[in-house]
Image (cartoon, rainbow, N blue to C red; front, top):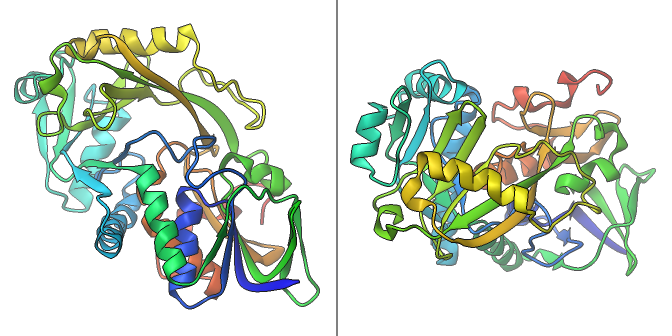
Length: 379
């Protein structure tokens, strides 16, 4: 039976990064992925994912995202791949909205370069936008996007260069602690042992760790790419990424990149809780109608013919903050889960944190907000 220093369960956005950082430290690492590497069955896909320094969710995220920027650039240099694109970023909404006020707060607390713009100033500077007159925006020039499929591929290639073994299309059937403090992992193809296990299984984490079932809830998400009627307005040099608070929820979007359309979605979409093995993965007419109605209101020059629709999943925690911790009753098991739709931008840094936790049981990063003991019944 093969014995490793560490096994990573799930080689998506977080798992590929964790595998790389563990291997980089000289550990003998096995990464197991039930689907392809990369794949479109979970959360870490969709061509582009926003990265932004202001964190309206909470200022505590800012040091982590700053570290992520550095780590993405390091990975680019190592692999020769283009992973992070800077377009500027807009966080907009009514003045009292969480998106605008929270973004402004994080900029002020962490001395992030920014401008506060009226809706008319946004619309004039970036003609693809047509924000409501009473909205305001925080503009931050370092915002942009990362390309998730390329990021995963880069982390996997870098991990393999460091000696990691990655096995795709090998689903984990289960795992159990060993009397020597390690863990045994079984798949339909083989059985493996390791000193430590890192669970980065996305929406499937709750199936492997039942104690997380109530605090990691998968939700169906849909994205649209519409062909702009004025395409140049939606090119990266003219169109910052955005998060926008409206009366019917928060939306987010991107310039054109690799798909001939303007990409956007609504956080939490219809709020559909799903089983990841049974989710309806085919976009429905009502999905397109919801998204198109928003584009027609706020980005009318982007609301041309549909180019593409795609589903993915958010895995939400009750407070919408991440889970980064070791299990209290099985410290050889580290978990990264519940990234609540805003996690991928941090993946390069989260992989480093998960490696810290797996190897040392602690990290010098401030992750108090992400510990399991904040939830009742998990301590």
